[in-house]
Length: 451
Image 1 (cartoon, rainbow, N blue to C red):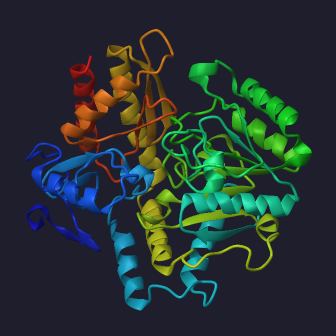
Image 2: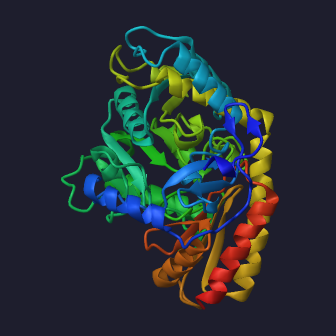
Image 3: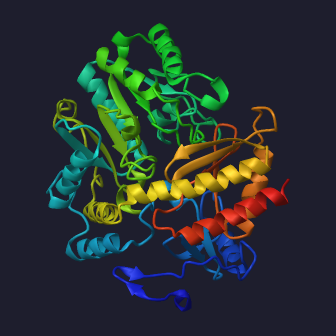
């Protein structure tokens, strides 16, 4: 596929930023590879769009058939700085040449400490902070719960309706949606309780009212004296990009503080400039006790972190946190490169610019298609919820039809939500305005074609 590459850049080639279809989607070369996948890869590993990728960057993905697709998914909010971003690629190459692994728990290295220092600076609050690094978002969430339990001497964990926190045993218990994440995989970890989420489209409550409802459930069903932590996504991800009403998060955080409960913000999907701030908690000035991060932290390499108040992080005995690959030196190098790209490109500002374009285009769509019941999100994390006109009855069939049209026509879109009726838009922050506008031209065509 080298014929598709143009001007070389530090750390790799630059791809033409165009949508181009030379075959049907998926094309014949991808279909051949799908047969091989069927032979060797477990059926439980699903695929949203069955094209095999050979190159990606900026706002496009190029497949083995030579099709160039516009990316509105970013690998589920992972490659916010773009694939093979120059600083990421440069750092990774240099680190691979030096060494790939020692295990930080055996012989430490600067990169791990550098990432922890950056997280202390960037995460909400000006208090003293420390971090521990892991491999995935689920690991980060599990370890945040471990820290909260040790620090408080309590067991109970509160999560929320529509939450998604991971696929391990504890995080499956914390995740709300059964299919495909939990079905048949129990029994799950205990002492996990669920409270109602603020969902403005469906509950009509103010943030304060929704918080009072949730806290009443927590008081009655759990009790503050038993509660180690509240874990919440400031904007829910897989659950449907649900943005709680203003005041909801601050009220929960204040109650947690008053009752000695650790307030954990799961910023795995919302973090690192995605919502127009460095972290979604910043929007209302919420300062979590612990923050979990992953996805956008390292430009596509596996890395995650728990960052929080030093006294909480230090409550765990030596050796109680860690893992063989946690804070791998190559992943740390990638993270430092990704942070460099975010700062240099003012990607929090860029996310707001992208959000303004998406909000305008989605508003136009909603004016023409009454199946769109809600537009929500912040920055480059936007969504629309599809319901049967005049109701809040989810329309998953129309959602699937629109997504399929977009995929056939070269735009990668993702769906989500408890009922499968939400489109989430997560373009790389490196995407151009022109490419973004073209992508939404296709989305508009999809709604017209499936009406």
